[in-house]
Image 1 (cartoon, rainbow, N blue to C red):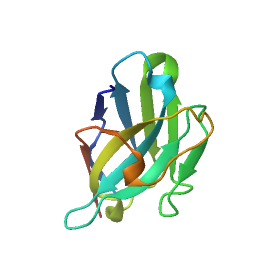
Image 2 (image 1 turned 60 degrees about the vertical axis):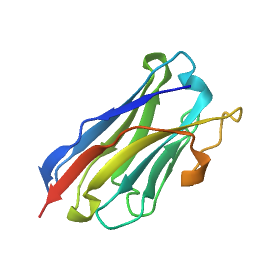
Image 3 (image 1 turned 90 degrees about the vertical axis):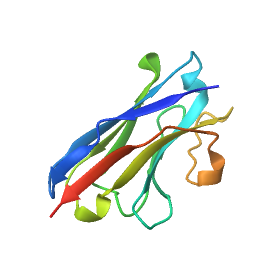
Image 4 (image 1 turned 135 degrees about the vertical axis):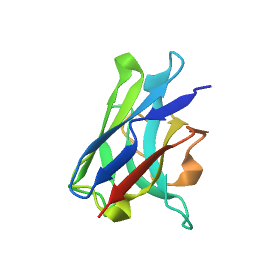
Length: 126
């Protein structure tokens, strides 16, 4: 079982940057593929980015070229560097974990993930 805690959200202006962090408990973090999702008010939760156990990244089209996902297995951490933020990026951002034996596979569906954090709010003003 892994527990996830997000941090790093806040209120920024359009064009600014933020770096989200996801801290995972336990000693088996490297066995999990990880992902970031977000949910804006009145909208469904959507995929943002995913990373495999060996750091293969995958991005939603809406964030490609602006966001960068990474992980540090030694520190049980995952990150989302968000640049050139837009008002439409405003949402609660969640990190998620999926236990898998596949080291090079990333997952983009909500149903793939077994564990979720509590979320961190990102607000981008215009």
